[in-house]
Image (cartoon, rainbow, N blue to C red; front, side):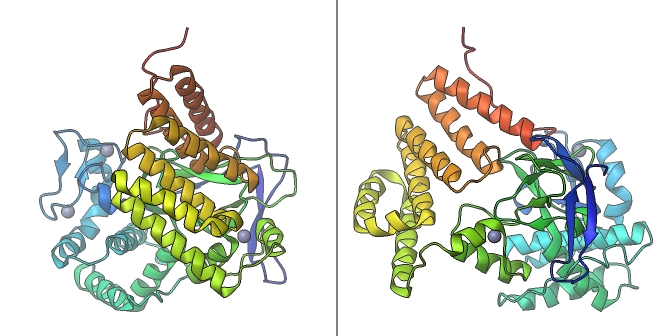
Length: 411
Ligand SMILES: [Zn+2]
Ligand SMILES: [Zn+2]
Ligand SMILES: [Zn+2]
């Protein structure tokens, strides 16, 4: 990677970080990492190829033994065969045991894929330098069950402690596989990325997955001056400082001291009763979106009124409110309101000084595009489609999955 250099801090407080060796313009690939292992998401396991992630057609091939792994072609099946052979018995057992939590099954499958790759390349310490993250969410028993399952079903020489550590490494280092701003097809472990890129709540790069090359690229979403740190976001950015800090410390084990967190720290803080009120407002909004329908729309007006003070002081509450508006307007096919709400959300995003081109903004422009199409606002749809295309170019998705096609081309 000629554009960036990896540094280790002498003090040990920041650990490793990556600096731009020269100015990196918007849209340029700053960094790329190869997958050590990548798995299809649990949700898409019956619908997409487990090797190349394309949508399966009728003639898909399936492993007869585990009846879990599916492939679009003989070629993909053959590519995965040596790795799959090492996991097949475990996948069958995993399927029949029916683990409760879907997300965790994906983590277990990713750990299996890592262990299979380690055996395949005969290197059991390939990921030794990655941080581990122990589960502390009350579901630790699932980890013990998973370790037991893997030890029982995989090659007999596997060491229980190593399996446990692999599970913890996967949990601390998995990257989602985004084909574009809205389509996530699974998760993977990319050792070079996991070691090099730190988190910022105002990131300057965003990851994009190339399913054919099985690589994760990080493209600059803002210009990165020479000597500046290259940083991506580990979490959703439209959240308050407090919530981001909580997610990062419980999920990744550090207190974020990024520029955005530092700036927002000096803003007025909420007291306990204000926090409680905000939590209530968010809860109400969430239930309304789940309920949908006309009644929910009327209640939304009531919630907006009742919690006016909350929506005035909290950016996160505003984000939740306008997201709820956008969703409910979509349900009742009020396309003008969908567009208004998405526009408001884009305005909030800009006010937080977050990058114009980012998966979140792509999603919002997609909403505008679809709503404008439905409403027959062809000019608006065209502009939105152009923005989506531009964001995809900047973020560098090589094979976007959700097409943005205009019904009618403008004059
Ligand atoms: Zn395939
Ligand atoms: Zn199988
Ligand atoms: Zn931060």
